[in-house]
Length: 328
Image (spheres, rainbow, N blue to C red):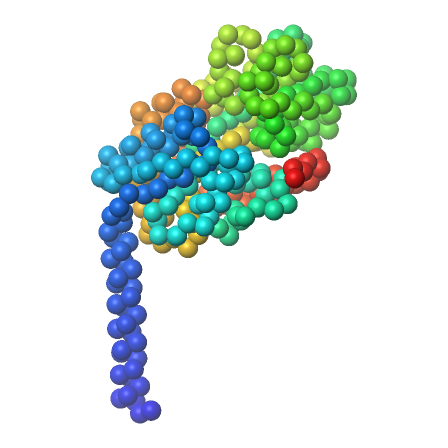
């Protein structure tokens, strides 16, 4: 092939490439041009559903495009994540994902039909929900340090509640025991209401409870809050020290909600969604509502969220393995 023919072929190839790129860019620039489906892996009316509907309303007000909430409850969030993982990566299906099925379930279950890293594109870690370390008013401890000293003095004497085997309240306590060398007895309840009932009835002496569910019991003095699980104090209870502050350096955990899309979605779509939802999270009215309900707004970048997911997967896999927790 002579130089003239070769250069002609190159020009045709480049023209085709630029045309394809131009079409892709045009599609991205038009996004979103139809309603977006947001999968929420919990039933209507719960905390995650309320958060999703509030954010979707503000998103619609900002970009004049509707978000349709698609509640896909079941199997502790697994069903919703399965559906989202296999949706087209066109930006018109997004997922409000809780931490449990994203970073804890992979260590608990032998088989999942989704892969946290390979199947999802992180957009933003939106909300952090601290866990509150609660003790019975009848237990003579006022701080985390005193609780650890008591548990070390009386091994296996304290019973702790969880809302289910392998849940955040269970693993938060396992992490505390592994980091301090203490031993307590796990009593698993089928949900929050039975756990609180067992707590108030004297069956257990402590538990990690979500901030939202714990606040009424703390304010009525039925339960005593001694620490918050996150790395920073929570705005809902600013006087409450962190566990790390209270004698367990490096301790940090909590639940969270993040926004993700099916993997291979356009980077421009990811950036657009991150920008719009960051604005919502930073909205003063929305922030105040979250704080009043015991949650903290975050609004991380896609990269920060991706790094957080990887760190959480590694940490919880280690905790689960050391505690020999498995769910068939």
